[in-house]
Image (tube, rainbow, N blue to C red; front, side):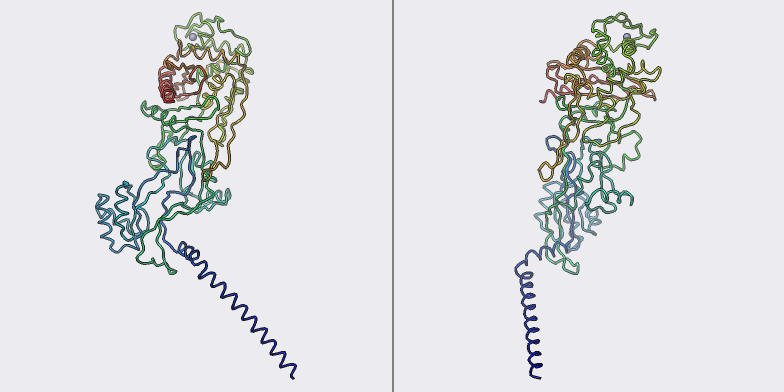
Amino acid sequence: MVGLAHLRQVRLLVLGLGFFAAFVAITARLWTIQVDQHARYLSCARQQDAITVPLEEVPRGLILDRHFTPLAGNFTEYRVVVIPGLLQDRYAAARNIGRILRVPASDVTRYLDTPGLLPFPITKKQASEIIRASWAGITAAPVALRYDNRPLAVHVVGHLGRIDSSAELARLRASTDKPYHAGDLVGKAGIEKYYEARLKGSAPRRMALAYTDATGKLLAGQKVTLAKTPDKNRQNVVLTLDAGIQRAAEEIMDRHKIKGAIVVQEVNSGDILAMASRPAYHPRQMEEYLEASDGAFTNRAITLYFPGSLFKIVVAAAALEEGIVAENELFFCSGHQDRLVHCWLPEGHGVITFARAFAESCNPVFARIAIRLGADCLVTYARRLGLENQAVTGLPRPPDPRQSLDAIKEPYNLVNAAIGHWPVFSTPVQLCSLVATVARGGIYRQPRLVKCFTEEGTIVEEVPPAPPRRVLSPRTARKLQHLMALVTAKGQGREAQVPGWGTAGKTGTAETAQGERLAWFAGYAPTEHPRLAISVLVEGGASGSRSAAPVFRELTERILGSQ
Ligand SMILES: [Zn+2]
């Protein structure tokens, strides 16, 4: 019996010790939670229990130009922030805000029902007046908007739109582990769309907030607070574009009411400095443009057109490289009487050298040279010069299948092709690369539009340029440079001459299937150590020499003059 009682006492002691140990552990943990880490847990609890108003239109990385100037994502506007639950007197609040904003109180009242931003932009002065007044439930703060009032390069940057189907939501969720919800704003076109997964952020980086208790009731007497939250994992896209050159190209197109495209490339690198397309749209007023039928959403710089006489650069390159023509060789042009193809000059150029035929853009001469070359040879050179490569480094876009140089080999197509008509198509970007290849001394570079991706100011990934490729001998390139300089010195492109710098290029005029004129000029400048290659397309223009060459001159003068 004694043994049994003793055993019971031992058991009780062990149990007691166990309870004591557990008590000590729990107390220590409670001490840690309640005293030691008080501040940390309080701030967590508060952040979970707060009414928040995002101060960023959409949580997303920036789209920047080559000098890190934002093209999307960093435009601020001051706005009034209201958290209605904290207002003491709704009508007094509306009167106070209305007085500073100079709007009727009734215009303000209707926005005082839900936490958020008043839809009117306000000045910095008005913002500081509101902040100084320190009214309960009201403050003012800068809000980061996605697009500027005067957006640049909209066709490159693209635009956002709401996720509008469960299929789209599923596709986005499968493409990245970032959070997507029905109705979120996502990239619908351009860089915004191509780099959605990189640009997408998880939460706004800045917000206005008011704390609530565990039951969701706002804590009385508090002011609206501004808070920053880290949002890692959102990347910025750095383009090769130069915002200043892009703006110059767009301003010139707008001033002359030009429909078409302008592409500017840096000769050395092949980087695209400007890619302008008109008509354009405003990414902040999408509803107004969605119904438009003028093709405002089309990026004309990467759209296929008949290149007209710009294609004569390819014919000349092939003929010179193959040694089947000399610059001073004589030809005969009988204008509209020509058996092969009409010349644009009705009475004809008569006896004309190959060099002058290039400068004057004489059709019959180039038809004869193309026949001498043969379709196979012409196609080989066109391909080598990048006229079947629609790829732009950094712009993952499927090529338009209508571009097929092999069609030149079909019967009766060669003569038409020699003067840049059916079945030859090119984009303004390709034609810009073509003249850049000549300016570079016969070296082709695939154009590049994206330089790198950054995160918090650090480059996380470079987009390397495609390797350069020699496609013409330096000797042929020099001859072509000479021919193209003749065009602006004495030929059809005199309007593209820029005194003091020197330019070289080629005019072109074609007609669409709908009978609309396409006026072209593509060239480079300066003639010594070329820096810029530019292609200009004016839809509905009179001719390359009259409509496109002057635009080339104006833009070239402006860029070179400002450097
Ligand atoms: Zn002629």
